[in-house]
Length: 315
Length: 317
Image 1: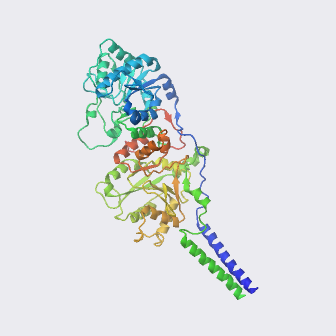
Image 2: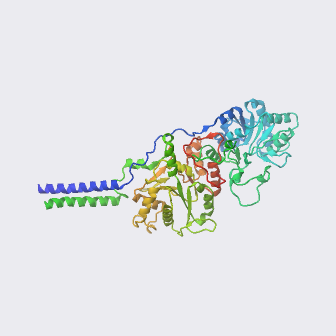
Image 3: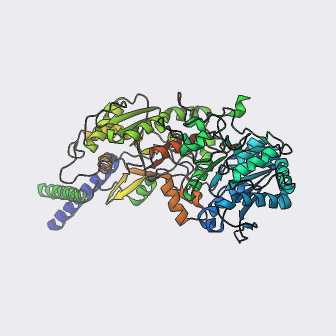
């Protein structure tokens, strides 16, 4: 009996000791549940931006047809990334190559190659004039390694009439008296400018003067008295860029200016003042950079940040 | 009677020794970790939109005051270009940013800790920050090779009470230890810092120079010291469970996503409210600065519940 009692007391001692230790260390663990409960709502909304009415109105008034200069061998490496990102934001998107494919691409009566680029441009605009003239007000040409922010293009164009003979892009000084718009950075023709381009070729006033499609376009535009537009923002910052953002934004030590800045019609600015917040295009953009720019433009943002540049508030 | 009492006492002593032995085998005290408890604290998300909308004006301004951040940027002269880049970019968005260096550089100012050992340097920086915090309650530790969006950090901790211990970032596991990975940035609340100051005094639990035999990386040292104080690592994520703290660069994450999710590259890759990226070059960081604070499509407005103003005397945001 005594034996039993002793064992019982012993075991109780063990149990009490363990119990006390556990309780003590539980109390020691100071993380109480008094911190604010985090709501566990899993929001399924992806991008909760509210588009201002202005944008909706713009897309009704400012219809943009985009055509992308590409080749069959680039469809997987480049063109599919254009289509996965900005291509579908155009009111009409056309991919122009030397042959029809299921991408879908439109086959123009040309061959591939750098020396065919102006022929491709001529045939592309003739095709668009024939089949799509009434589908849009403005006609953008871009490369398969150009990234375009269509909303900013629409906003920029909304101040102008597409019945005026106008042509916008990154204005370069050389080769043409009134200058020409860089091909890589993308350029836009108004409906009237497109009519004049096609008429120019029909009447023999414009011909295949050069292999450089952007210079050739500039020459025809000048011939047909189409005006060079100024697309810079209210602070004079550029919106069309023939190179990636890193080529302009990065603060540089003084050095020999690269050709693309020397060619600029408007005095170039290097560093953060180079580029508008509402940039329209960047060029020489590979697949990774295409999606990166898509992420930066349409997704990644600083919560609650009051942007410095609010042109609407300046009015 | 005596023998009965002594049996009981023997039992108590036996139980005590048993617990001691058990705690020696586990990394921490018994009874502190149940699976449910673990799960609750491992993932930390921002407050939901609905919850935010329920708050009053005065509650919002209280949160705004409470959520100010002291940034500790751990530099060395070897990282001079990144140091200059951090100085010129994201660190301007901290309420207070202090650069802590291993040795002085003629080119840039910093608090010179005169210390080569990484862990000791981190300790000294933490001590300095705690003493100079003023009324700032949140602390963010990063190297200059990290890029941080401080506004999104504030959004993550907006409704979290800094007088509670928080230790947040991209968490990884090393055996039994959950720690916050250094390169993707480390967030500590005031209470976590205060506890660190206490445990720093304990040379056994938290030695100043780390034990020579097994030298742990400073991120794991930090996690261990915090664990002794009852502070555990939490993974910062958005409402969809995407990590907000990234130890990779944007291009690396996008590249991975192109291979793995070709149909939905950006959606699958990274959060809209990401807080950090690491391993980016100074040029890429300047482009990211433009991408975050400036480049956007006209007409897309967000009706956020809080407003953060741009910093003074800055031209790249």
